[in-house]
Length: 302
Image (cartoon, rainbow, N blue to C red):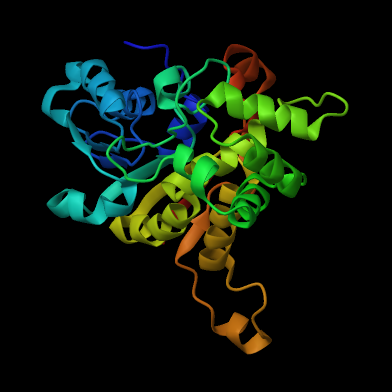
């Protein structure tokens, strides 16, 4: 495969989706096509997959990686929230995958501004044509709004201190400059992760509207499934995982705060294939450190 893409929880995804010959599948977060290739291999000779991604660079890589499958792989530039419109007559489908994390292609490209290991512009857009960048939030938004984003999306307990430091250092020109300001603002003893990690997570979520997108796509994905079809979602931080977990449990077990009568009348529409999230083994984490925080949840449509 082109690129240095290692699919997270690869075998667990295939076990959860159970791709079969003749099946139809959607990968709403195609990336470099690693998971999609596995699904197409296991659904040979006539299974088909629709792959969506906003990132044109990822789509170019995926097209090369999936070229061997010919017309069995259909690739489109689109957000997964538009899955229903793009799918059209391709639906209903046997399985849908959503890998909510960043791809290695995005993280390793300094020009995209997702990471601070290499210096780059404060961008962080999945879709390079989207209007909002991290630079606008960092350098132009009111400090109270910036602090709220860091606290809510990054779960950063030093959010107000960081926001004040950013305000004093504006304008910040690059990812490395931002990371250095955050590190100085927090100070103190070293943590397991870089002190700017939560800030970068929060900004990326805000730039791309990620949490709102997850809340939007889950009911859409369920509607597109055939009865017996499966939805697999990989999340990488607690905010996304909480949204996925709560949605799956409401559809499978009923509202947690419902009264006895409501619970008695509840008719589930989903079955939890994974009652607890599947996490990477020590061996997989050693091979792919990005898998350390990954959690996979799978449901089946009843």
